Length: 624
Image (cartoon, rainbow, N blue to C red; front, top):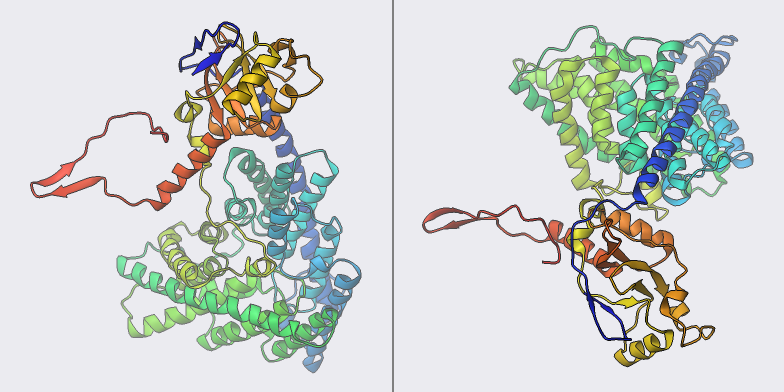
């Protein structure tokens, strides 16, 4: 590459040589760390607030439940299944649904649904901006729906509430859209951690369903928020596992592990069917010739009718999960719970009322796992499986298949039960369920609703290719550098003669030292005298990049300064050693796609046997 000096025609050679980090990168990293600390503090404060709100939500659910089913003003937990209302039990969920419908109509329609899809949609389409009214409308509406017998869990509403609280803080304070997304995820997962005391599972939930990235700037605040939520759980709720099992799970044999894998695959198929039915019910409600405000009341009527024949389906039903894991339920009760809980939940959720999906999925999955496990034990008594572990496997596999939150499902089961020996069976069954769900179902129970609105959710979390490639790997020795000694008229004439078009030009002195960047519009402006030196037009900051910087750093500079070309300079003497353009960035993406699409063997099998192609440790260069 040469510098064009039109006065004397002497080109100044510049060579590509290693340089040190650009001077402007250090302060930016320091500023990024300060922002990370600031967002982390906000995340912890959000988590502390949501922990208190979580306790308030549970109290409110219990209060409404006790008033509705027992006529008592108390916040002590009483199981709605123990009511003595007779036929009147059918009306109570319908009244709750009617109230929720009015709240959605006159408050905010966003309170409808189970919370996580709505949070995902705001992250993907609305810069993580959630209506602040959701912070109090969602827990209140959910408490009414669940307290009057709705077959939901408290985790969905508190996740939605935590996300709304984090988003509200992010809208009040002066932060970026990405930082607001982090606060939303921190609040949402802190809520889950506060309810269940499962901070690690909550972190994975953020990664798999909310953040769509894995980086220190997002994981650190979310992790601190989840730890704070877990501390809130231990302080305000209980210190032990939320779903204790009577006996420690023994290390399964290989034969038992194979059967647990089969259970996972079967439940994967059922999770697909479950998701399809839920959205089919929702579609049926959409076709009703009445206003959507009345749908939750109709769904509540169905909940009450099912609850009259199967009282265990009413309310949160965390006790059902504990009983399934204890192995104390008869198979008749398990079968009844499985069928009627699903029927009640599918109709209620499809009606658009307010409530969570995690607890129902765990209950239904646990019941199915116990049923399949009993069948296996009947035909293969020496299989080595146990009904409590089969129920735990079913719980996690159902959630893994329906939501495709694989790691969340596994870690949640481990944290919620404190059964470390269940890791391998959980991994085998959840992976099987996830595999079936991935190949059979396009969207999940979390993404189907927003997919119908045209919102596409990411399904892969790969490192940014621009972070992996350095400027040196993409640098080009071809390009035009103009000398600041040339006159404006000479440069214009030469460019027109050579028919050279560019939006920006890099300017240096006769020794190759970088002086600045000049726009084409400025160069050809009629306001400048043709006799003036080119250097007098350079007004822009000296934006440059070093060879050991990543392409991501270069792209950020280009975007910040709205330019499409960058000089690569030496820190020692500020001399230009190369040019990086937007075409080079596109070329990097092209080669990144080739890593996924091009198939070729690296080891050749010839007549003389195995030929191993030895390759040197040359630096990867996509341009070669």
